[in-house]
Image (cartoon, rainbow, N blue to C red; front, side):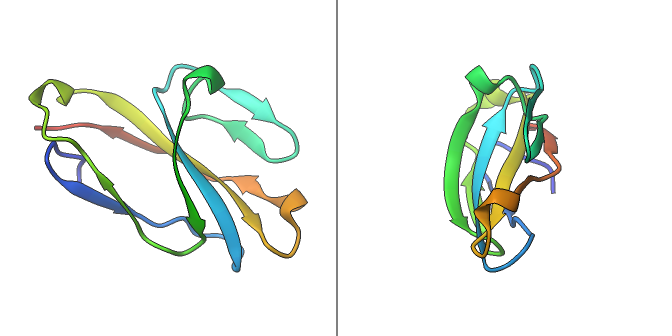
Length: 102
């Protein structure tokens, strides 16, 4: 569903399992290339916020604060995922683009 204030959204990073990922959020304010993994589309690297790390395939609950002034706030989620068998061949996932609703 849509991101709404005061609710929790669940995200699951998929990829080569077993593996690990780093989930991060951005403000859709820039892109950067990171060889050999790909392009960070979530936002400018200086503004990226690391949210969590976990095992690929594990659902991650993300709470959206119950703050009315977040309504209309654009954001993006993206992750870097690496297989345990060879962390040098990981990749950046597609981004999730969201706008917070009240």
